[in-house]
Figure 1: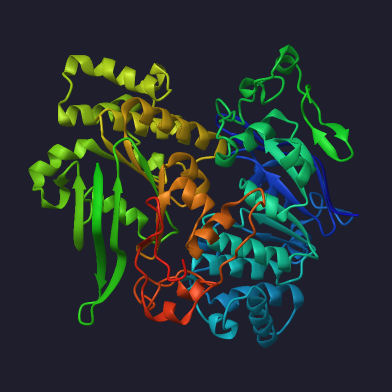
Figure 2 (figure 1 turned 135 degrees about the vertical axis):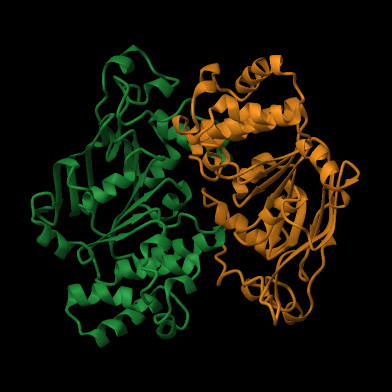
Length: 310
Length: 310
């Protein structure tokens, strides 16, 4: 059973230079207890997709398609109804904990705020729950730390607080946007280990450009390029039998895989190339790639690719 | 080419009861001409400070830096100015290394003007050459940094550095703000340039995968000291220090190594623990480690480790 079913999703921003097609006709579903990785490089639209799911974009943005969460289309409900879902049903762990936490509010209070709002607990119980959450994310002496301010926490500890906050209302779905960005290598392994432990029972969408993180955490992986998905399969398939030239190029450009760069750079989302969006950078591009835009094809059970030559 | 001996930098804080932050604490290493030393460590370990000390951007507390036999700390202002063109630095964020209001061509011309190495008439031609050496088009000369991508701007920074014909290049996380596919382009370019111009690199990074590709030798830093230094292959295949082993296991994408997840975080460089600086997080800690600070000891083939148990 899928928790979230996205179909035909489009998010466009009007700008003076033209329309930015940040998310362009995306179909995706997240099953229960599954961790789905959404991978792509800067500017491919992956963060916008996350924000679209939470309906956190400005009103000038055009959004089309459907986002079905447990039978409800999130794009059709009122703002008040959405507010009851945000944080309680679907929680988001944002990148950059330093700017996501309120610097003048005690850490415990920030976690308790959401608990009071969604679970209607009194101040004291909410505080207690917040301490419990800090303990869950393995923050030493949690009752004392709950009374401290974000600046007294290190980067890794702040990220733990963000995770605690995300888990506080026991959501069914967690969206984590670059949960390990800016963390040191050894701290990153700690956070990955923690996320594995505390989110075992939850559906999760992890947005990242870090293949190491994806490999550790995800069951299935979707690769995004220039606003659309190009490949979608189980994590093992993506790492062992990648089919799309972009996926192969992405893996091949890793230092450990030989450091073979993909020539050129990602296209602007205002001025997308005709035909396949990847064709100007693709070694295997032929005439048909220049003229026709490829659709997603299922190669074998659950492995989808957007390429004429796969 | 470059010899760093017992380099030390303390930052002091407090007026009455002075406390010292030991950012760099007696670090020694050598780099031979045309070779690359990778300096690896997590944030706050002092690796950036070492780069800044070599360039004399901050005043050292003690130690010596010999560049081509010249003691850099003994030079006066004029002598320093004369030698500086030969030592250049690349920073992490190319966008903030370039003046946003200067055209690319003007930015590259600046060092040529300043040091008057090339007559005015020939300057234009030299800029064209440099632009092409780093893989940009002559049309980029009249653009501004904001019109270029991060990867292209890092190429501009490289062109500006090449304008000085440097011998030693200190690269401080030159690709950590770039996407993987672009990172591969820049790293390959840096390797090609090194081959062509016989540059010596001090390559500072937190990314072991990147350092492995770039460096002939690797030095691992923890809390202001070197904990291990040796040939790249030896460090990768026979890491002796528990910290190096943990870093290596954390960097793995393919799951080939067993993950070692370190507990806790780096202690503060102000209140340094007694004994080995790593003992609080070390999985193999013995009593001796809490009392006596280990020195770097040779374990063969230019491989040195600071650990009682190695």
